[in-house]
Image 1 (spheres, rainbow, N blue to C red):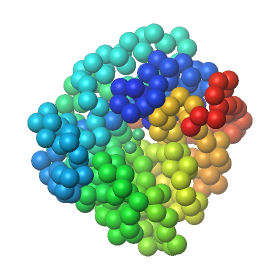
Image 2 (image 1 turned 90 degrees about the vertical axis):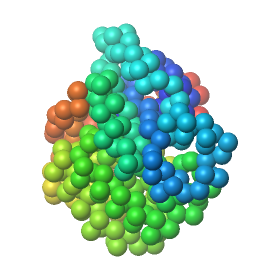
Image 3 (image 1 turned 135 degrees about the horizontal axis):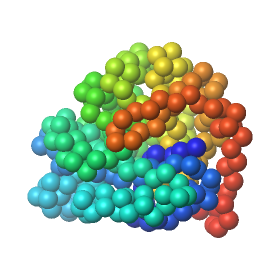
Length: 299
Ligand SMILES: [Zn+2]
Ligand SMILES: [Zn+2]
């Protein structure tokens, strides 16, 4: 059992890299991947962040230092050294993978990936965190996401997936979780196009269980999962945990959903190479996702 998407005190998580890994061991995972936020400041920033007024007082400093708003502030070099140490420290207890959640921007995608690859990560999760002024740089903006915004974000994800520069497609459906819609079938063609683009470029698709915390519908999930099954595109369940208590959160429910949709394949990554694997549902569904020990009410 693995969880490849989680954050730490390096950026916006509550617990350190070691604390996250220790809790993953306690939860019984066999493999854990740390994937901190990182992104270079994009030249086409207005297309993503809209007006600079949403970027607050940090705006000029971030632009000067070439750091994207949602990125970790420290050095990438130091981050990967920390992960290297963690791999060594925990090697007898759990497999630790060095990942990254990379902000996707049109103007600097190649440059960003080239830079990250010099640190030899195990995988890059590609994720859009802002588009047309809406995004995590302004939580206010996320309250007003429209169906058209969601369509734009899906189209942008398709464009990025076609460039094949990352290994895992990150939370492509998060915009819809903020403002639930009556009927999402108008997006199903775009889901299919996105999944086909992933297939062509050896990209696995994540099912991000953190979205299940919000008002979230099951039928579109079943649709896109069935489409992954149809095209044999691997699905990776991730928690996007920002504290140790939500590592592998809701995996039991999600595996049930994957099984219902007929998904057969998941994937692992080492040195950015995908290893497809059949999902062992017997094992996955018998896995005991207990609430361990301390402060189980914290989310
Ligand atoms: Zn994200
Ligand atoms: Zn994340």
